[in-house]
Image (cartoon, rainbow, N blue to C red; front, top):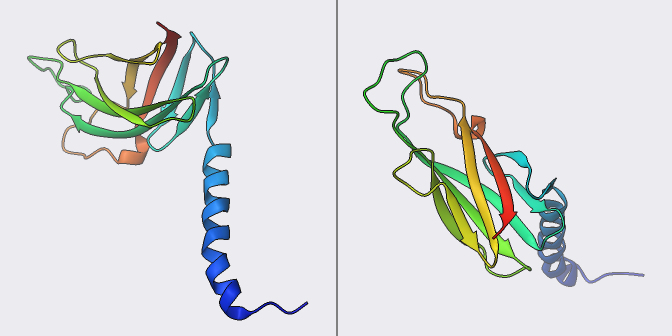
Length: 141
């Protein structure tokens, strides 16, 4: 069977897009409900026994006290996540390591807590985005 090259060129991007979408959803981790779990920047997780999907989008700022330094205040790390319930819209939330900002986000009967952000900054060295790992816990509200 011969395939028209023009048809093949128009079909190929759709095939690549579909494969990329399938790969990204298959690569999401499975996280337990009511138990701590970790995600790196760019990772996502399906929360067991729920229709909740959570993604760790970025660390938008990190003013935490550098490792080994004595600081007047602890500073704050801001983690941007997205939550998606039942395949709906991905809603972004900023969670904070400091007491002044929200440490959890609520959406459609679920709550996601930010428990920790690693590594701590080091004086004079910029932390690479891909080295951040956050610890979360998802619960029902």
